[in-house]
Length: 575
Ligand SMILES: Nc1nc2c(ncn2[C@@H]2O[C@H](COP(=O)(O)OP(=O)(O)OP(=O)(O)O)[C@@H](O)[C@H]2O)c(=O)[nH]1
Image (cartoon, rainbow, N blue to C red):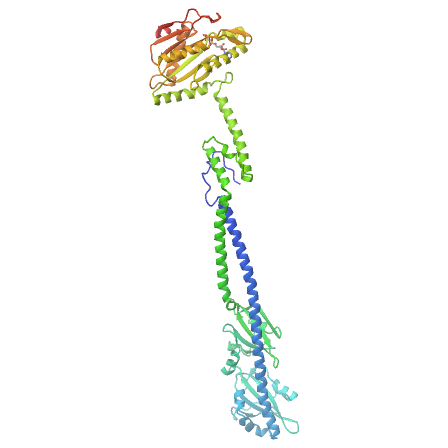
């Protein structure tokens, strides 16, 4: 947390993006987003896995059908050749009759691209397609040897035909004579590139996307949409889909990168021949419908997030209202407001606790500030204002008078022969006299007038809204009357008198001018024998000095020298 320097301005309101409300709302929105995306994501991933399994099951079931079809198709072709062999046996034919036999079976042309016959030495003795086909010998071919040895029909591995030069798979059938000897072997070839064969296999597909292929257990490609792969044995790196199809009799995998495209590969081995029919299906196509589901789910998550953010903002705004209130109060106090009662709330929540703690803090702070202010502006001994306060107050009072057109009077007081009180009765008695003197002064003025002790035994009174000299005379008389009673201090009874110089303002009077004028009047009273007052105006040349009536006074040290009387003194005389 960054701490503000004491001089930093208090921001009026937190910026939207750094405010606590924004942070909480953003947090709520983020949590909703994470939750929504998390729930949607997990659900959709589970759904995708289930769809994947479903597609795989569908593919395997379709492949089972295709495998069964291919099995029966190959068996039918074997049956076709077997029926020819049975006819040859029943008619007791020999190698020389085979060409005619083949040509008499027109259905052979439907089942095979060509049917050739080879004698027991492997030499071609007949060919359905063209009896003048080149002479070849197949005695070294495994299928020939296998058929000769087993005396059974064999379906060969794919190989390149010596006759046509094209990739073929052949079905063999031994021709056995009445003695039980194999005198020839029929070899029916199926051209793997022949459009009819490819169309027949492609018809087994259940989906438009992806492709179907056939591979034998050795890894030799029997059928593939990419024709140049037929008869090849691609490596697992080159063709992972083909390698996957050789992993067992039946299965599926969804982690195959076929031609750089994530694909699902499913396969099923045939029963009758060592072939595996397989399908490769791009996952992107498989999950194409899921894309819109994802889009809708993420859109819904986004909508929920916005709604949560707005709702969170509103909720936090309501919940944070007490804190806003607190902030406004603190800002108000920072701007100078003194009413701290707004902090004293009844809420029992954390805001209430914080608010009341602030209330206590502000209260203590206010008391300390008040004490400091009082100490700075109050005379410690007498409790009246001090010189500092007076220096601030007088110019302000004069400014007010200037604005209102009223007059201000300043009375400058000095206790007569105070030094001798100190000297005679001690400092403590002198202090007590000062305190009592101040008390009587306060009692002799209106509450709107201001009494201050300037220093030692010097006091000053500021009277506002004075109507003229007559009133100034009344004020002076009131002070003298207030001091007429003897002072009781420290067991002594003293007659304390004071000399008072009162000056009344005229327009645009400065504080210095009126103080000089009052001081001048005071000096005049002192010079004229003390225990009296003189009234003058700023810039006036004459003093009206009035002495207190000495009757009833206890006598020295401040006994009046003559009865109170008004005496006009020329200013220069007073000086
Ligand atoms: N007890 C007491 N005496 C103080 C205090 N401050 C100043 N004094 C004394 O007050 C006396 C003021 O005397 P002055 O005003 O100069 O003279 P004065 O004796 O009053 O004579 P005049 O003013 O001419 O009548 C001095 O002796 C100061 O030491 C205070 O706080 N307490």
